[in-house]
Structures are given as C-alpha cells and as structure tokens.
Image (spheres, chains in turn brown, blue):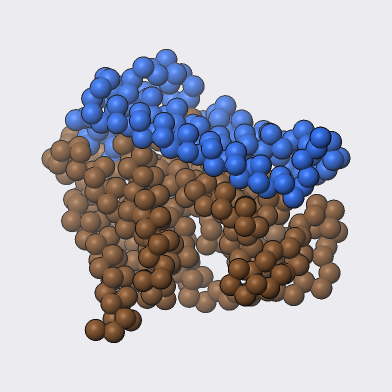
Length: 325
Length: 134
C-alpha cells in the first residue's frame, strides 16, 4: 500500500467517524419533537451519552481542523447544530467558547514566533468585538429558523471561499496608508521554512476595519469563529504575508470571541454539559492533529472537510426551511 | 522601566498562556465535581435531555434559572460552579491587555492604549449585559 493511500485512509476514517457519530445519535429526531417539555428523542437516552458523543465528535473535529486549515468553531456549529439534539442557542454559545479556547491555545506560540502581530490585531479586534457583541445579542432574539437558514448560507459560502479564494504568500504593499503608518501595523518575521527574513507593511486599513466589523457580526451571530474570513481579509485586503495573516487572525478571534462569549454567558446560553466536553475534545484533537500533520494528507483532509461542511450547511438550510427537520 | 514594544508580545503571550491553563484546569475540576455528583447541581443531570432542546427563553423558564450576574447566588451548585472557569476563559484575552496599558501610556502610544481600553470596555459591557435583553 502506498503512503498516499494510507494517508487517504487515515483521513477518510477520521471524517467517517465524525459523520457516523453525528448521524447515529438521534439528535435530528429530537429537533422534530414538539416544543413542549415532553421528552424528545434525546430524553430517551441517558444524559451521559451526549457529553461522551460530543467529546468524541469534537476530538475528531480537532484532529482534522488543523490540517484542513479551518477553525474548530467553524466545524462545530454546523455539525453539532445539525446532528445533536441541543437547541441552536446553546450550540452557538458553545461554538463561541470552542473558537475562543482554540484561538487561546494557539496564541502564545504564534506570538512568540512572530507569526502573530499584536499591534495589527488590536484595531481589527476592536471592530470585530463590536460586531460580535451585536451579532451574539441579535442571534438570541431572531427566530431559530432564520438563523438556521442564514447559517446554512454562510457555511455554503465558506465552502465556496475555501474552493476559490486565492492567497498570496508575500503580497506586495508599495505604500502603507496613513493609519497603518500611524498605528505601526507592520513588522518583520523570519519564515522558518525558508529562513527568509520578511519586512512587511499593510494598507487599506479603513476598509479592513469596516470589513472586520461585519466579520465580527457574523462570528458572534453564528458562534462559528471567523478565521475563514479573517485570514483572507488580512492577507489579500491588507497585504500582510499569509503566515502573519493566519497567526494574527487567531489573536483577533480570541479577542472578539471573548466579548461574544460574555454575551452568551450573561444570557444563560452557556451549558457546561455542552461546553466543557466540546472544549476538551477539540483541544485534545488539535494536539493530535498537529502531530499528525506529517501523516495526514492535508489536501485530502481539506476536501473531506469541504464535503462535510457542504452536507452540514445543506442540512442547516433544509432544517431552517422545514424541508428536513 | 517601560517594556519595549517588541517585548509586549512575549508579555501578552505569557499572560494568556497562564490564564488559559488556569481556567482550563478549573473547568475540568468543576466539571468533574458536576458529572460525578460531588455537589448538587441547579438542574439535575437526568433532566438535562428534556431541557437542552428548548430555546434559551424556555430553558431558563423551565429550569428556574436567573440569567446574568444573579447566577452568583447559586455558585455553590456544581453546574453553576463551571461558569467561573468559563468566565475566566472569556476574560483572559481582554484583561491581559490591561497589563500592557501602563507601558503603552509611558511610551505615548495613544492609539494602541486606546484600542486596549476599548477592547476591555467592550468586554465589560458584554459582561454587564449590554446590549440589553429583548
């Protein structure tokens, strides 16, 4: 058996495991139940089944999220919201916590290696935080079907972004704008892969600030984090090198998610029984995922994740429209 | 003596690393207390599957939970206890910025100091329950 075949098998088994876990549990049946207190399908299973299933699912998500280059929160909300019995209000609260914990876990390494730039993150995080607070509050008052439809559209949009978005390793920024100069949104980092020292600067700061308000709003509204939007915005719009954009995105995410997390926490939408197994599974999975980077074929994992997101996004859309409850 | 801007990243990295480790440990500890029934929870474990598929408003109503800071009244309950770790984790990024603030002011980096203050203020507003409930 070739190495490539083995890699494909490992990746496929992981994703299949995630899907099976999601589909075997009778969550979708529970959602169809009447909103009365009468026990839904989930109530017929002992309570402890759910945190274990959640931990296992998040563990697999954590493994594949790293090589797929996508945040754990982006996978969490559509998959857990679509296939577990929890109401979307609690799933979004937990998704925000998962995104926050994942970003905080990676932050110190990224800061120490210079891959994340705090000065660049601060103004963007301020705008994203404003958006995320409004988004989180808005999400808790909008009808759940509206959120499901919008979530489905956004997840399918992420799939399109993953398929078509370009990236520039070292974008050329001839002249930094006035705000960028004034705030010191520039830096120097050494690319560990090539040993190349790169001096970088950014431009289009006002446009980026406006865009991050919108990104924050979506992140807070759906609880899906926003790494998928942060990275292209910092890399393609502002002109920061790709690795700096990826690292700084994590910092922005941790700061904006912390505000959104407080909105969910203050409203009572954080259930420890959902949040803690999810965070633990995702953190443990991400550690294994980072170690398996050399074994897993990142392009295969990425394609499989796209497939799962297509499925989960479609499921959310159909659930919201009442076609597949 | 002021911390140089280049060292600021290391200071912030250390702060969020330590606070995240502490909050995660606390979360795991209180969750163990919760699931192993060491202390009584506010909402019985067996009742959760009947409640977690309800909307937030309905859940709060059926479980008799008061949202917001009034939850502190039930801090002795094992499920509510978990929210301390969640709160710490949620506060870690913004509160760590506060440590950087004096040095930014000493270096007269007004914009950076303003961003930090803005982020902390936003987090505090969110923690205080703003924007208001519908």
